[in-house]
Length: 419
Ligand code: SF4
Image (cartoon, rainbow, N blue to C red; front, side, top):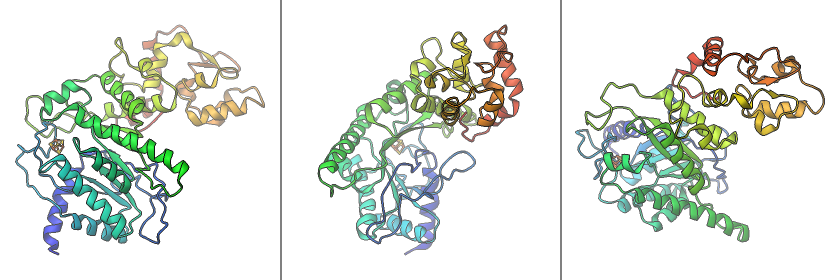
């Protein structure tokens, strides 16, 4: 093996892969049942993030950065004058196994530029995963990128070896895609997504009847959208997201602030700040939609198309809906408690449990751990003295920002922080 050449390829193809943030490995339960290598059901798998929030504990590489397409937002686009490289299938297999044995990684995240055709590329990605599973007995985590436009048959095969599959939609709207990636069709993304969804359902149903049914993409599928490359509003982005969760059983939608890499007039100029805070607010909105019972239309709609960057989306919603508050902490419905700024999922459960035995007061709430500095304006407890009824929503927002300064300063950092 020519180690210098492999090292050079690794430099090029790991660097090219860093723009893809959709690599969380949560949700897979693949066991080491054949005395092979690895076990993706372990706790230590892949939740390590760099300073800018990107996952690093998988070997995250492209098979190649050659590409026949010319998507304006992508560093790998064919018109970009960059150094190109391509791994052989066996090289990726060897690297994965040797890194795994050295404890550098716990799995593989493999994507690729499209060379020759979507099917040709997809076939080679599958070959890597198949060799790892069949020849190396590798049970560690494998996330394969599905190539838009790949055939149904290949998508079916990919899920038999990968824990997670993802097709990155990249641009949230059809019009944005047409503008920046005219070679690509919206259907090229939807078709593999639908195939993966259908196969997951079918394999699950079969496994109820036949125990030996193999697992198909046990960690489900995910997608990624680039934020800030085109003029989409937060509403456009989150409506697309809601559509994917609902119609394609997405495990996760990832939001990736656009990193300016091109002088193309259709895109933000080089040097434009990466919209990390916006990315954070979108993740918070996504969380509210998936775990807090919010309908996306409550958070974003025609008259409120952009998230408030000064405060998190739950506080922003509460400030726009003050007629629903204050809630009596000892009486309010659990679903409504979840909507109080400063009260998270765990705290809500603790409140519901605790109030079965006693009437809660402010000290109890403090012990439960709710963020009283925010919640106090939206709840009543044993007294109503903490309400600031005479303030307008904007005034109240400023009071909260002032008294929560450190928290909101922290949110300006790139790290994701949820409520
Ligand atoms: S097809 Fe994928 S790799 Fe190729 S230019 Fe478009 S986004 Fe980049």
